[in-house]
Length: 185
Image 1 (cartoon, one colour):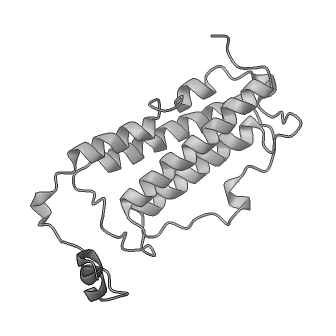
Image 2 (image 1 turned 120 degrees about the horizontal axis):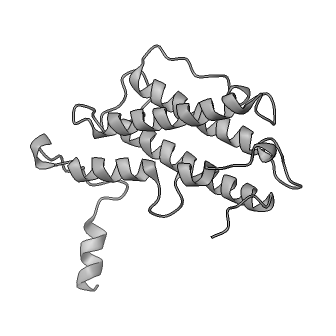
């Protein structure tokens, strides 16, 4: 038998090596926190929220072009509600999430009015800022399980917020292009 085969045959099967634990002081997470804050702003790999939503024509906010599953209003509200729910889950043990899926989507395809559209944008941005502040705070534990959760960590939830936003921002860009409402470059 070859030398490498002998070593391999001596290994115990089915047992994973124990994870090496580092002392808490051995890991400086400031760079990770800075990257997460930037990720929540987007702009590195794709357009950020403000650029996607800015100047969206009022007449096009409730329109679903053929083949599109959602209007801009539905996507905007879904983004806002989802981010708000995750933020509140992270910071409030008494928070109750809306029922899935109905509680995460608006009841109408169009916003009730201009003020509701603007309010949704303001609330989305305020909640995003709050998520960023939570991440940037060195007292917020990124890797510790959220006590009232089912195994989630703050890091996991922040990545979920960023992933969810990226997905739906892409949908908004495509929707805006389909509507012919994408600003000329």
